[in-house]
Structures are given as C-alpha cells and as structure tokens.
Amino acid sequence: MNCNIIKNFMMSSGDRITRAFINAKTLDLSEDSKYIIFSDCHRGDNSFADDFSRNRDVYCYALLQYLKKDFTYIELGDGDELWENKFPAIFEANKDVYLILKKFYDKGMLHFIWGNHDMDYRKPEKIAENLHFYFDSKEQKEKKLMIGVEFSEAIRLIQKGGSSIFLLHGHQADWFNYNFWKLSRFLVRILWKPLQVMGVKDPTSPAQNYRNLIRVEYLLEKWIKNNDNQMVITGHTHRPRFPTDKELPHFNDGSCVHPKCITGLEIENNKITLVKWHSVVNDKGVIKVKKDVLEGPSSLSKYI
Image (cartoon, rainbow, N blue to C red; front, side):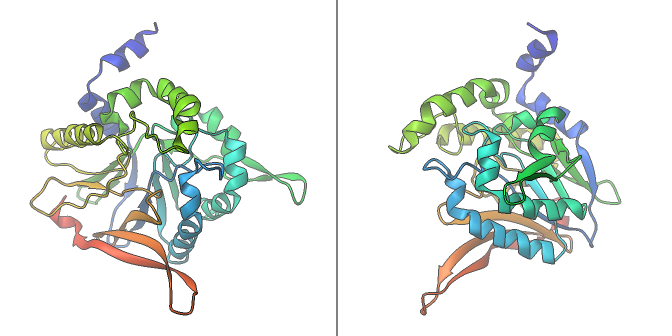
C-alpha cells in the first residue's frame, strides 16, 4: 500500500481538519463582503432516489435572487451526487442549475468545496471532464460551461486583522466517509439507492444515523476548542446549527434536501444569518417562493 495512503488512514480527525485549515483557499471578509453558503444539494438524475429534485425550483429561484444582489456563492461540498449517479445524467436533469452557477462563475463569484459525495473533484481531470464543457442538445454542439473552475478542501474568509471563518464540508471528522468513501459509494450505489424506494436509510450517513451525527459534531467541536475557538462553518450532517455567542462557534448551513425547503447561511454587513427558502401557496392557489430568517442576523464579532 502507498505510504501516503497509510499516512492518511493513520491521521486523526483533528489532523485532517488542521491540514485542511493550513491548506485552505483564502477569500477576503469585510463589511462589503456578501456570501451565500449552501451545501449538500446532492444534485441527482431526477429519479425516485433524487432528493434534490423536490427543491430544484426553490433552489434556482434563491440563486437568482442572490445573483441579482451580487452575493458570492460558496458551495460547501456534496453539490453533485456522484455516488449514486453518472454526471451526464445529473447535468441533463439539472442543466438550468448549472447555467445559473455559470453566471456566478463568469462574474468571479463562485467557489466550490468538495465533500465526500463529490470527492472525485479532488482530481482536476474529473472537474474538467464534468464542468468545463457541455453539449447543447438544441444546437447540437459543445459549449463552454465553467472552464478553469476549481474545487478546494476548505476555504478561509479572512478579515483585515487576520481573524477568519473556516469553511469545510465536515466529513474530515467522519473517519469512515473520509478514508473509505469509495466503499461508501459502492454501498450507496449498489445497495442503498435501490432500497431508498422502500424507506431504508443509509447507515453510513450522519444525516440518517443520529449516533454518527453526534460523533461528527463532537469531533469538530473538539477541534474548535483546541484551536482557540476558531469559527467554523460545515455541512455534511444536514442539521442546521446557529450557536449563541456563549456556545462554541460551530455553524452548519443544513442542506438543500430538507423536505420542501433548503437552508443556508448568509454573510453580509459583517453579520451572519441562517435562512430557509421554501414554497408557499396563497389563497388564490398561486405558488410563491419565500425566504424566512431562522436565526440572526448576528454580528460576526461575537464569534471571531
């Protein structure tokens, strides 16, 4: 076995998180910064097992509102459901989504982090294969999508004085889904996906296994304690978190596959807000998309 592979297996969750922190991509954080953070879209193929399909219209509407307001979009991992699907099927089902993401990219306002379900994007050749070009079936020709787009393991939003917000997917605290993600992918693709229609849950997923969820959160917060209460934003567990100023600064943006809604974190005017986008029907039977504030806005100075 390769020495680097053995070394990765031997690393603790804290070591993996620290490595991601040290090597993180850096972005500026100021009063003028506007970020919207979503994760765990799990964009699929529009089949019975595609949880994202229920929220696609809400997600697209939300993205367009942020695009109009010049927010920078950060996707915190597990954007594409590459464990269950081949990318051409994902793109075919979500072409409108990718064309909106392209608008963010063309404006220099798009940043991706890879999670366990899209760890293939650690490889530049896989990014190029999936996201640099697409085939337009109407015009019967290949077109540019997001040539040169990059994925990072982590991002740090850094203020002028050096204080920062650390963003990562969070599976670095999930030993099995980090080191044995290919085995997890095999189990999901071959076993759990067909069983989803009968309501069988994937026991390897912290979003569906409460004990695993609690352990992942415990390990992340252990790292926060050991690193001067560094403010952290994660995804992975699908459970939104918005701590008080007396709790450890561990935030979670939730997911885009909640039943009938998506959740995310906005950063604007040096404040952070947990929001929910969902569809509502008025008394005339008209469906509209609405944004609710779940927590905040709270000043970042409370946490960093």
